[in-house]
Amino acid sequence: MEIKVAFLPAFIQSYFIALGVLLGGSLIGGFGAFLTGEPPLATIYRFANSLKIWALISAIGGTFDTFYSVERGLFQGETRNIIKQMLLILSAIGGAQTGVIIITWLTQEHGSS
Image (cartoon, rainbow, N blue to C red; front, side, top):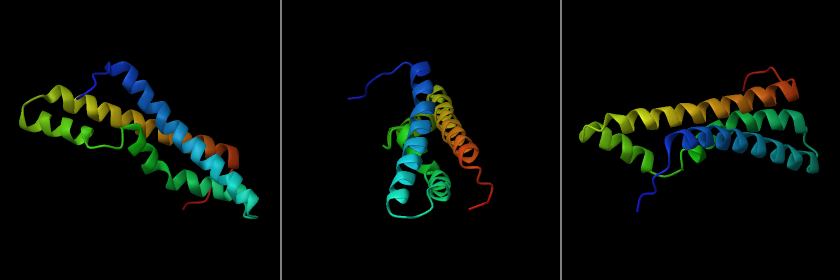
């Protein structure tokens, strides 16, 4: 059974879910690094860069519903679904990138990893 969600709330939620996963995962991981004696700021920065894809996956639902919607759009001519899914993915990418920018700003790490 598919649950219908209005597009604008889903668009906004996608952004903030990705942002929250990235910020929360990085900061909590940095706390764990602090407890184990590792450098917390460098660890937070490293986690932020490696959590981007997971933030994106969690924001779009982590299921194959997105791919099913794209398939339906391609093979059944429902282009509206493709556009909606691409906008949701872009929203999640924006949230994850915002999180990385905030973490980079907070940690003042400028190295590439």
